[in-house]
Image (tube, rainbow, N blue to C red; front, side, top):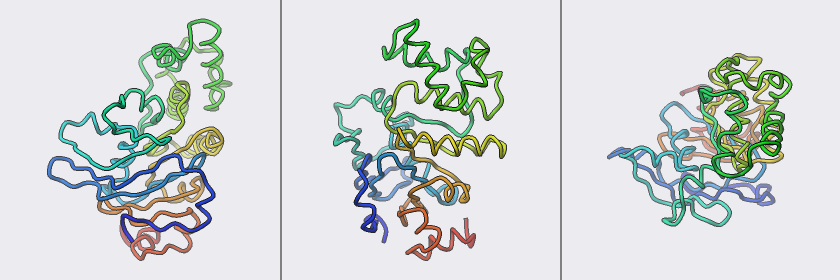
Length: 265
């Protein structure tokens, strides 16, 4: 059942954080997302899975208007967060991206010190003032991202001097420093080694206490390990969305089962 995905009764207990209604997106003439309807739950991890080119990263970028940066993109439908459609004309996309942070596939620290990587956006947005207040925010953000103990004695060194896994945790610290409510992650561990991947997964499970997390992954074992809910996309359509255990153990749609069991993808 595509478009209007049926959820089991258990899900009704959870508070909805992001409500997507009839979302369509085109790259030029290519209809990339077809009539997506989905509720994403607060303080849960939702994984988006599906073969390459299925629309999962495009969908993720709709949630903080990153696709606005591409000139040939047009879309319709609604993405409602806290009862407000983020695509309404009176909504500023910068404020959207402050509320809905993003962590990318490749770690991308600024060419600045570790301290400045975390402090730059909060200072620019007036969230904190320079000095003790900023120092405390940098420390708390690095602690939340599990990086503080590794970098507390070298905050003046470049962010790019860190290992790949540390850089990704620095990018997570940078994201949470602006106090978002939702964190989007686009394959956050695909460029990392297994030990760094394990640290990021453990961090995701901790962060969901304070944030709603939506992650794209090609790693189905990762989705099974960390996600509370999983959405399966195929050819720009949302095929099935349910609790992760249901998706992996007892999916309702044959296409989901075929993907999970490796028959295509």
